[in-house]
Length: 182
Image (cartoon, rainbow, N blue to C red; front, side):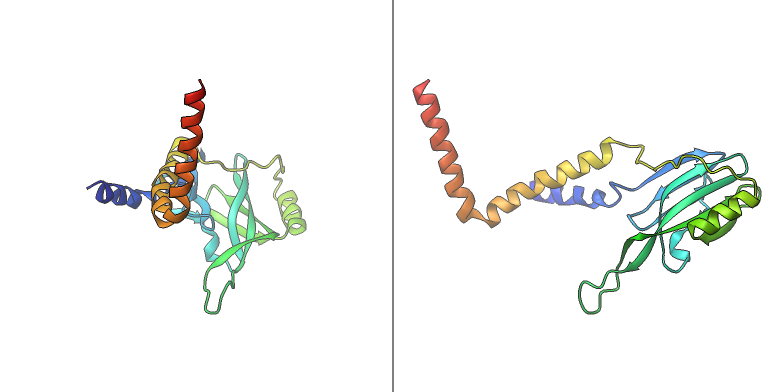
């Protein structure tokens, strides 16, 4: 029964680190996984989804002005860990920039940094300090990780019994001797 209940709770594990964070004016930043970080609206429409652009990765920081949302995205590349690997990973060596126009949800970009600064200057956008998105829910990912660790310890103890049983006897012997001397 305990095993059944604990395996059911694992189903809630997907999404421990996912979130949707309001960034103002009806817009939100969403994270579905480490690669799918984008900008949407409260009505759940998506304005900027990085996977819609070749080689563009997640939003890593943003700025908000009266008329625009500016985003800084990392690149995306094939992982290639083994033959037939179709997964992708973040390319930290590349930065891309987008300008989202609030009045019509227009998306301009992707731009490289120099081109982005030039376009922003032409549009009269002041580039300020970038805001790095953080999960607004501190406890859900922490408790999810702790639950995963708590469930894995007994499984690993059973799997590697030839190490854990002698180790438990040794720890018990030390504790017994300390209590005996006290």
